[in-house]
Amino acid sequence: MEKDLPYQEGLFTPRESKSCSECKKPRISLGWCKDCETDSMKGNFYYWTSGNKKIDELIRHTQLNTSQACDYLEWIQFKNFEMVKYVGSGEFNSIYSAIWMEGPRSVWNDILQEWTRTGPIKVVLKRFDNSLNISSSYIDQVVAYVK
Image 1 (cartoon, rainbow, N blue to C red):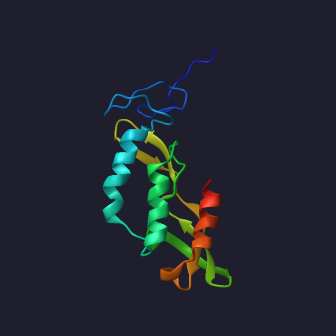
Image 2: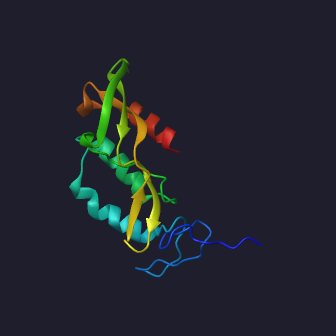
Image 3: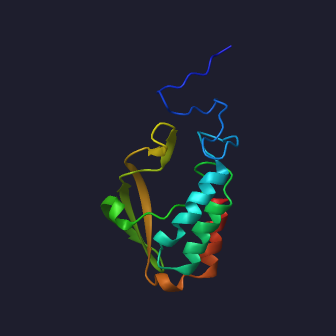
């Protein structure tokens, strides 16, 4: 039988059975505690906005209803992207490629009590020509994609 060993001191591996150090409930994956993480995301709702109420509600909904550590949307400030390049345009938007310097979260570090991120990753950005009037049908498309 294979022994589950952390590959780095203080980092949680997926096969470890560990309780949350804050609330003592079992973690679901990669050191992730749904209750504590949801509370943390709720506490940050007032510190960011996309500038569009519908988009903000969608992001918040995915954060409050996620069942996995990385299965939700995250608002990323434009200043966190580098090498932004125009790719093309659609009917009401422009498409760009970019590098997200921090990258998504990857591993929980129990010692530092924070998530480490993957680092630079290539992403696609969509800029709406009239971002204050995004249609409900577009939001429905995003919801379908997220599911």
